[in-house]
Image 1 (cartoon, rainbow, N blue to C red):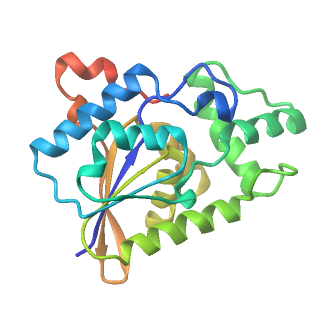
Image 2: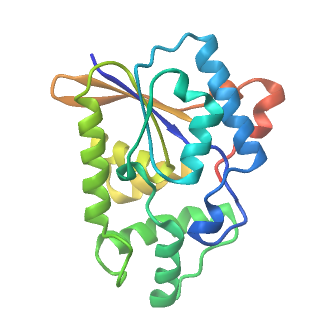
Length: 219
């Protein structure tokens, strides 16, 4: 039975409002990733393949986790995040919907943004919703066909898309899943026949200790 462990990157630059500015771990993000790496070592996690996207935050997370001790890290751009800030800027310009400043505002904003993107109501996006869906599906399908447990370091939107495809989620549920995914959270898929089944979602065992709960972040 093939297993894929998906890990979201550590906390990045939360004050950023563009792709370049966001794409670097914060000091807390490095610590979150290091704690996860220690946890995987302590629990003697069986990992024979390691993959990550090509974004700086992916590479920094994999390095802080010590993921290279398990296998050579395969970088795959198909595991990169949607260009959220670029989409948000286009959506704001074209539809007058500004990026919210609060988490509460973001909860209602995200489903609207993703629905507009899926319906091709955002002109000249960096990639279409269909293309994002296809590359995420292709990457996970290819990884699931390999031998041995795989570790994949990626982003919340990519993980959300994998959940959408695995569980048949509609766009509102897909958006809520993306919002819920915490930094350095662990998600597991197992192959059952010809399909993949979700067996773990949004776990942060390395952050469950009382003295680390402050590090359970979403942004």
